[in-house]
Length: 169
Image (tube, rainbow, N blue to C red; front, side, top):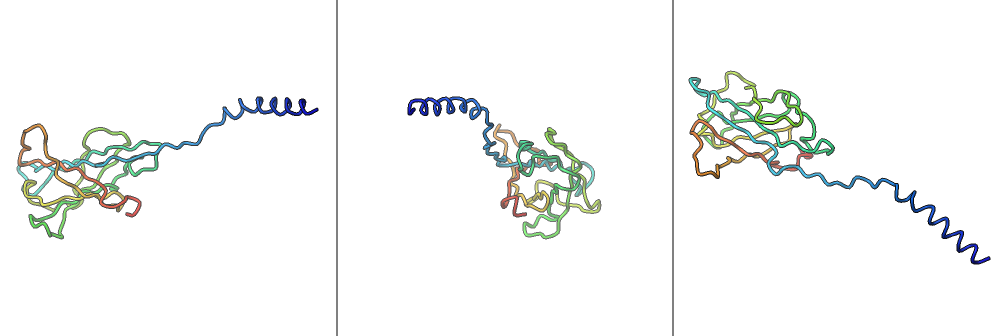
């Protein structure tokens, strides 16, 4: 009798193995955003003193994640701010806002000047710029070329990173 019970238990265990192997494990993928998710190009507009052309590129996050740049950016959700004067402590600023940026779009997308009467110093004299995405600030640093060439004095490129965790903004 004991042998029958042992064989019955083994038979039940063997039948359960294929069913257990078919279970889908939970998604344990860890998604990590880019160190510098936003890149901003600021350029003086020729023959228009104080006006700038601002464009930004986004390093898109995986659409399956819940990270900030996993979906499209709606108009006005991404804002670039530059100071109105050469003073690093200047509180007066000019803002440039995004148009619709489709998820995965490549290259630099143009931004619109929020206040058309706002003028700032030439880019070679800008002390800082900053970016906000839905109220969460990104700090920006000037990107330096590593190919030995100099940027023209009318253009600057900045890499921007989260100034604080983006879920706190």
